[in-house]
Length: 238
Length: 101
Image 1: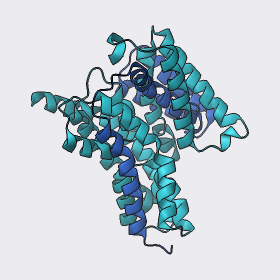
Image 2: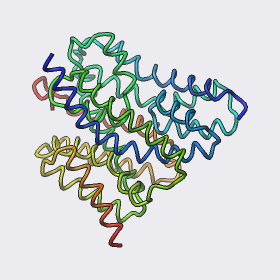
Image 3: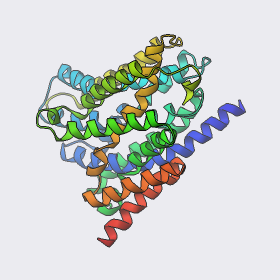
Image 4: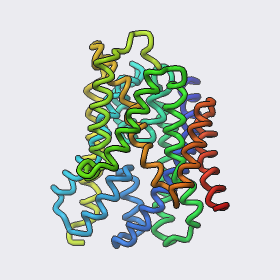
């Protein structure tokens, strides 16, 4: 049990960062939700139930055009499909004793950030680490939404601007250290960033949504890397 | 707003939850296939790299403050800084840079 306790605490610690980054993003979401005519309760409820930035921003646009429920479902599927790729990766990462009930709970918190921080932990993953992450970052996401709706942009732009890099800073802290002294990983990360830049700049490719871009590039690059450089059993835990 | 807002939210939440849940339920057994294993090993690095760059450059008020944050994060992460350190100092770099410029 002390192991669970420790994992939970570590999760809370790392979750504070996610919460800070989330606050900046969901604050912006709150402002937009207000513009779309939502009440504070509705906006916070949407944040609590969905926990997905791109999906929620997309939903605001759809609600404005009074879309059908089917359209809403399809848009969410397209925008959020990348989560299933992350879940595949996480699924293999959990300890064998993390059974069905744990998976039901953990699934709710598969976001870009929670995935990013948890999947590169050394060794097998204790679901309590994810609960720790979730128990801080979800309130952060909700609180930011609430403040955004009610404040109408009171928070200084400078602070929002600075907090906006918190999540990217975390991603960098996750992927760079294992790539140090590992030319293969460094090369893969570098090519991923370059191709991502290319996708953002080239005429037709830049029309692809961020969610699909992530899926296409991940399947492509990780697929080729797996073909060319299959990982040996020992190197498994990175 | 013609549809019911709460129904919209529930539809969204249901779809998003299932996307997250299904692989966690159906991929419980440890995969033995070397190719698939390697693929899943590389997934996080590619995904996080693609999500970070070039998106980070557009996250702040200006390209230059974003670059300052990006470079600070890269250097600190390379030196083995913790998640917390890297992230907070990247934020601080952006903040200080925007104060100065």
